[in-house]
Length: 176
Image (tube, rainbow, N blue to C red; front, top):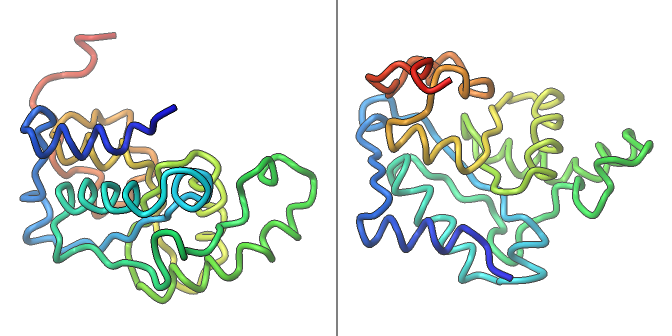
């Protein structure tokens, strides 16, 4: 079993996946990243976390990336994994996620990137309760934005600051 994240990093390094952070050069929108427990701490370790950071920095600019503390294999669990997101104990799940909420708030990032669907859902929900609201994006969303192929109908989770950024010149309705 493999994760797609090392492939993204390799393809960017090889020039096969062409992304650019130029769109964020003047905007200076800040990003942080969630290290999913199952992908990083329990399976692939810091090597995957490093590829995740390389990929994100290539997309948003190294100067616009703020790492959480602690990070990588030592990062805190968001509280949504292992089926917990689907259980009926929402209050407990949110309470468990408080440490992650505090960790994200401490970065003051505008966006938290997640390569995991469960983390994305939990972190999105935590953002609604935070004193500093952030937007939560899947990793592929920011890759597509940085590659200039994120269609208008795929911008649901983007804030107003990014909704009109790097829109493809072609009309996505051509492909429907």
